[in-house]
Image (tube, rainbow, N blue to C red; front, top):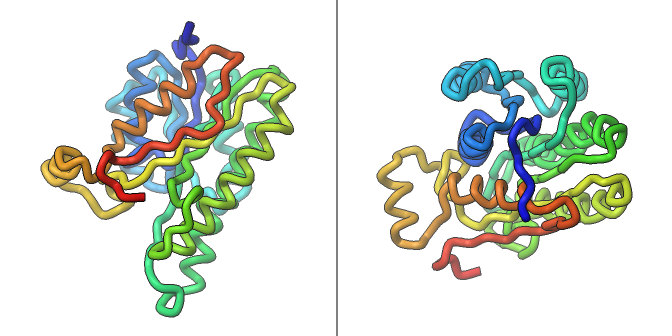
Length: 243
């Protein structure tokens, strides 16, 4: 029997668009209380207004700033009294040839995609350990399982995430905490340059990409499994993606 998500307190990073925003909407429909975190204050406020201020907290957060990440968690606990779920979803995407790349941009990618996850987990973990329950779910990528040559730095960041998720899970499993990664293939959203709803729908119609809503539904599946079930890795691809 699946467990209810009603009244669960969920922190979502990268909540202002794409997978994060779609997951926020899906969790709001399930009756969750949400902290929405991202750098875009305006878009966070818009989403919080859409979902209802009584059960939603918008916290503009730069995940490269350790103090800001700690404040994100502290504000959540002050508002809702606890944290049940961290959905560490924020990420940057940079493809291309290494020879043509910008190492400073790569450093920023690693700071957000890897260090931002580490900071977020470190900040929330004491609360989950104290209550001996909770979920940590991280957005990875098929690039974390397959070496994709056209996005080597992004792939490196997601390989790091896979290693962290697997080892963290083993450290905290006995304390009642579940840890998992969701690894989508191609998703037609802003991270990959898709903003036109008609174009996104056409990509899905051709089975060439997932949508952010597809991934959000998978997140709900992972979180709603009975407490004795951990989905360590959920890999999902568009039906026609040749990987």
